[in-house]
Length: 355
Image 1 (tube, rainbow, N blue to C red):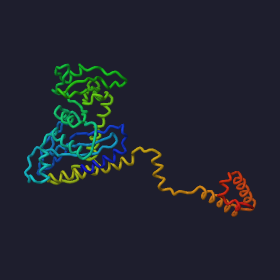
Image 2: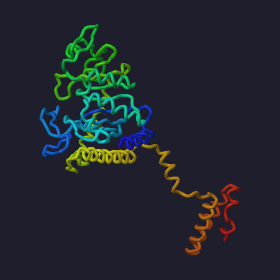
Image 3: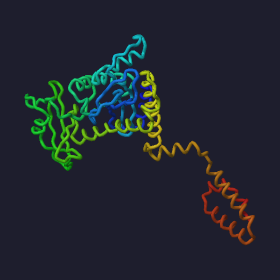
Image 4: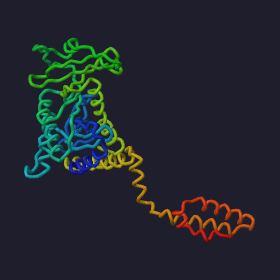
């Protein structure tokens, strides 16, 4: 699947403007098997969005987007059950990977994507992944992080003193401009050696509250940080599409962990092909390119041959109508030919037009 997605990314990049930002997006989603009892490595997880528990796996996914097309690159179905399988097989590697922590596994997914030839500038993530250890690993790979920040016990360094997110908001300066939803902005350090800029934006549904977005790229303005982070929504659309339209979790009901991996790979591959087909049909192209595409279907017609055929057609029409109308057509054709330059007259059957 990684080979298929990396090849598709390279094809999409030829249609992407050099001014458009490409990003990696990391997120996880529920892979539910609530009615199952004997599925291999089946575990119990808590959905951090609703707070409810479910049986199944955590589907950690890495994707690529240029703001127009989203393509899944790699995934892992995380569990909490230790496997019992031959350690020499590829299935054991997948099962061993399923026991890793999400932050550690994100680093491996990024390494595999970069090794396959896929490139991006930023890694986008939500508040469940935006923590100092993972940010440090991403920055070591030459990538910038833009992510939502959770209002927890995390501390930030302001003038050498650690403060929480609320204290950071009080220390931040107000952003001047026409965009009223951007409240404040501040340069700080998440940990020593990782400078970041934090932008505070107004909560869309709760006007009296705010949200914080962190970026390790200090050159970006507040509107640019928000605009780039908005691309993270592509992976949410991807999860919704694969589950509701491509029947992820529902098409097969096998018990083997290998079957679950194969089923997920097939569904993701379908999405890649559909995304490429959609990009081809909706990509904005210049009229010049459309002209050259149509030129292949139109044969070349010499202008002299075209003029001769036009005169012969007029003579044929004149011979088929009455004498009075025929004389008028031939007379008008003679006047038209007489007004033409001599180098054009040489190509025309003028003698055939004489009465």
